[in-house]
Amino acid sequence: DEDEEEEEDDGELNIDKMLDEAEPAEIMDLPQLKRLVLALDRKIAKNQEMRIKHPDEPSRFMESEVELFEEISKMQALATAPELYT
Image 1 (cartoon, rainbow, N blue to C red):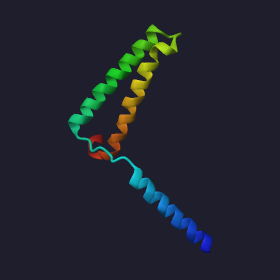
Image 2 (cartoon, rainbow, N blue to C red):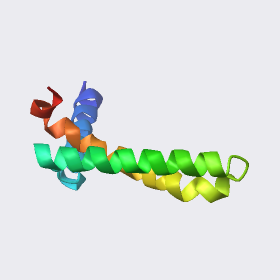
Image 3 (cartoon, rainbow, N blue to C red):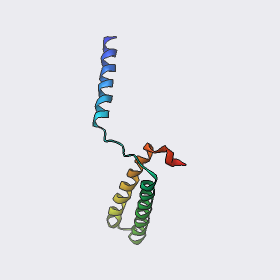
Image 4 (cartoon, helix red, strand yellow):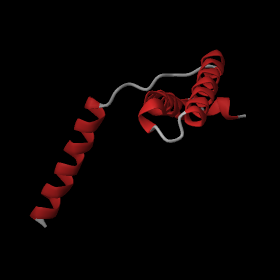
């Protein structure tokens, strides 16, 4: 029983630590969403263009892959704005 209590306490401490270390979520509004979608659209188009131009040379389109990944990652901010889903 004592071990179970210690494990629960450790779990609570880990959660508290994770929350303290977490980056604050960015609150998104409609204009920000529009900019984000436009930027994502541009990154997708650039990535497609580079993949078509250099299908056998992945190193030539790697930068556009990274840029696309970064834009997609920014979409996580939508989780803080469910009112924008409709």
